[in-house]
Image 1 (tube, helix red, strand yellow):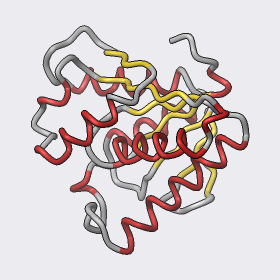
Image 2 (tube, one colour):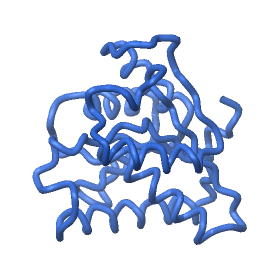
Image 3 (cartoon, helix red, strand yellow):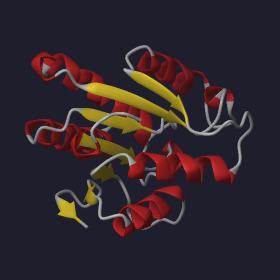
Length: 177
């Protein structure tokens, strides 16, 4: 990836079923999206201009949608959205229902760049791990949603810490790990 790592943010967070609240609207969902948009805006105001999404249903796609909104709000900043896909045909995986496929397609249409991180055409844990490491290796800030549950987000945060990446956890808002 040829983007400037020092001006790049990546995202990591839960899929819809792992949230403590319905991930389809309501007060808690609205708070999350407002916090996330606030952190994206802060990043832009600190001269970040590239945002990498892993494009999974849930936090990743919502973050990408909010970057698209920010691109409209800051046209002079020439913001870039990059999709880092874990494998080819990712949107055809078991994780995507029609609702999330439609949102995925809408985001893909607004991406500056789409990167298939592996050559795989099937889902494996290796694909997700490689995607997450790719995102962290190409950014200087990680905006995440993590409440302590084990899984990919936790491993991504651990890897980001080991690489000296700034971590902004919006689950605890303004907590920088």
